[in-house]
Amino acid sequence: MQAPGNASQGLAHGGGAYDTPETADEVTRRTFMANATVAIGGIIGVVLAIPIVGSLLPARSTSQGSWSPLTSAELEQLQKATEKPVKLSFTMIYQDGYLPPEQSDEYVWGIKVDPARFQAARPDIFTGSGAAADVPFTVVNMGFVIFSPVCPHLGCRYNWSDDANRFICPCHGSQYNFEGAHLAGPAPRGLDPLPFRDQSGKAEVTWIQFQPNTPARIVISYSP
Image (cartoon, rainbow, N blue to C red; front, side, top):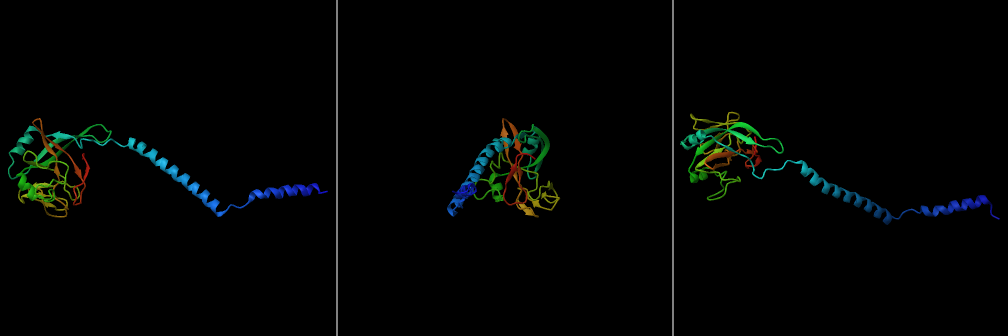
């Protein structure tokens, strides 16, 4: 008769049958399932995050900027302009995302032009005869062109010099002629035009901030 102690040992040895090592295929399958679970979880997280993050971002204005009116005196001054640019001051109203509307005192430069002559003088805006401008608006309107007062080099404010008969930036010496074409200095392009329109008998302008120090005219924002 077998001793009780030996029977217990037999059962213990029998339990060892469940400890059979996994094959390479089983290990590979288990690793694949773990990686797949992690990947699917990541995809689900991204899908859920997109609408959540989107709901936190400010809504982009479909109007692409607010129109600010010029005073009747400013418009009259522009209409009387001949061979000199006119500095036009106005109160700009704008809204940034969900913040309340704000206003600030700004100015732009306006010139009276012949459309065909201006197009020929500014190849950096127009890419050929009859071609559209590289900005999403009509550049010449009512016989006028409005320039941003910001130098395309690094964002300083330039001025018109009667003595030199050109626009000159005091920061780094960039210079532009009456039509805003680049003449000298480090600026990579000519002066940037701004939208201008006649709305119910009122002249209105929209402010645009362009990316500085690049040949391309890239819109950054529609507020200062």
